[in-house]
Length: 255
Image: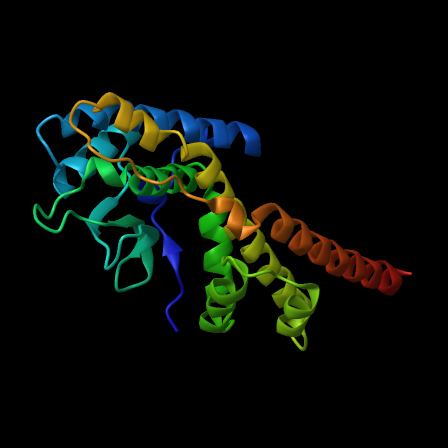
């Protein structure tokens, strides 16, 4: 099995930039995202923006050698994922975005989508632990397809998450695997919560900037339907229980 590795210069900011508390890093991600918006907004003066132009502005805003590729998504949504070589080395990120059917370029009317993904991009660059955590999960030999499928079906969804559903999934797994899964779920939801709350403003800002040429308005994301805070709290409670139990086992074995 190929072991995943990471090209740090292409996948994360240098420590001198990324250093700080979790809240400070989030604020840095907000600052970079704001800067990108300022850099891209005038590019729509002559219509839709080409993927290459979008990619160029994003690289310039990042101001480093990070790897980024922009491509077309298969639907109206967007997604940011890690980019790997055939040898399992992470060489940055790829962002899939919806294109205008006619121009095959990126429309200002998808601002809420592309700014959501741009925030994810900077959030990842400023938090190396995100990459380390997912790499550890995969390199440990866990059934990551099973874990990812559960996350998509039961965690990052508008459906309610119950303790029973979570416990049933964790049942029979070793304690360390349970801990790794819960941390993966928690950080996945926190990533989405940050992206939704920090980028809600941009679609309205874009429409206000081009109010003389826009004839309709996009509906804001209704991310409250995902119940992210409630799910995060439930996952953190379960994680705390397992950690407390495992620490007690270690202390008892020492005694």
